[in-house]
Image (cartoon, rainbow, N blue to C red; front, top):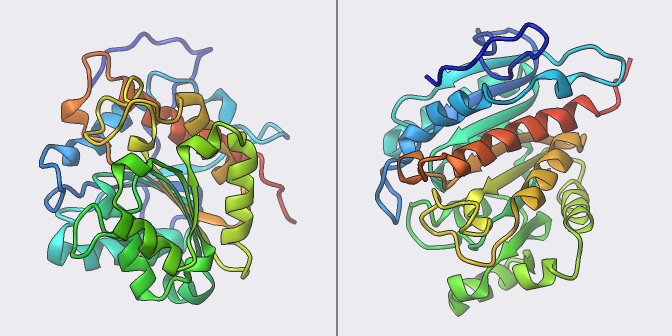
Length: 301
């Protein structure tokens, strides 16, 4: 754990109380350290702990509601061995946590974590659910890996017309998977298109499209959508990806949208990050941006 100075006037984020069965919260963190089926073998299972440590470098003061009241944030720990046969238990854990909170924030792991997160948060509402991914890749591959979560969710019953993929890099994908996205009615916004459309507009449109049937929305923040200079801890990040502030903006908009019930941060291998932990720090900031967005949601009596 990083040694940090103590200042009673500068409250640190992180170190939130542990979640217990039935405990109500505004948001709950949950680690799903998937890594065994990754197309790029590495140490993505080390990432949840690294993000939790990095959270303590930032302030918790921005997480208050407009009336000054604080969000109730709890930490449900990590799901053990979520790959393979453990995926069902991970899905059930997300469902249990989601029943007690407005927002579940999952710390991956590779992108395989998106499947149990989305399915667990959606429950029986998959027929009306929506998905927004910020990702350089379509994730429509055959088989079961970190390259297949979107395909698997479509096969589970998610409507492709309520799926939006922002930041796709055509040079990091194949024609076959681009065609598969089109065949399923997936809305694709490439990185080049985001140079002409502000992230705020693209993300708002994607969230509204995902929520168009009135169901819950899951947002996958795959950090390899970012430029490699700010996300070197992502094996598949490419030069020319999104900026750090664009991803942070998307995270805040996701947290603020009333239909979003779950967000994941994936494709970050903390063991591959630079010495300054810039990718892990970006992930931690995205957690806080999502919580700040949640704090800004209208409170209904």
